[in-house]
Length: 118
Image (cartoon, rainbow, N blue to C red):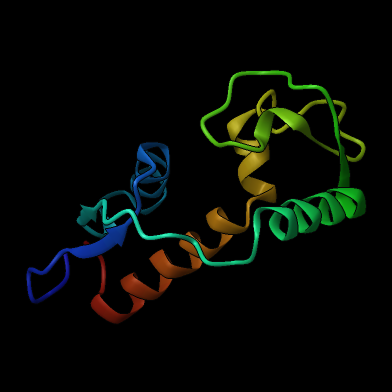
């Protein structure tokens, strides 16, 4: 919890993202989750799909769905050289590749640095 006893506001409707963020931040912060159902305005479905496929072609490839996933694209994305989809990958290995995990670890360090140990 922050020094002012105010929780961090995390806006998402994805329960799995909430679980992931809580697991990464641990006791560093208390989250108040708001499911406001805001659209992610990043382009048309075609533009978003095209960009995901382009990124996949750079670091892996799209494959038939395999594995149980908590996030939409994980069962169909296989990272080059791994031989498994993100949905099949061990959590620790996947976290090593995850932009969200890396960002939250940096955020947690920043929170601890500005407030001290919890």
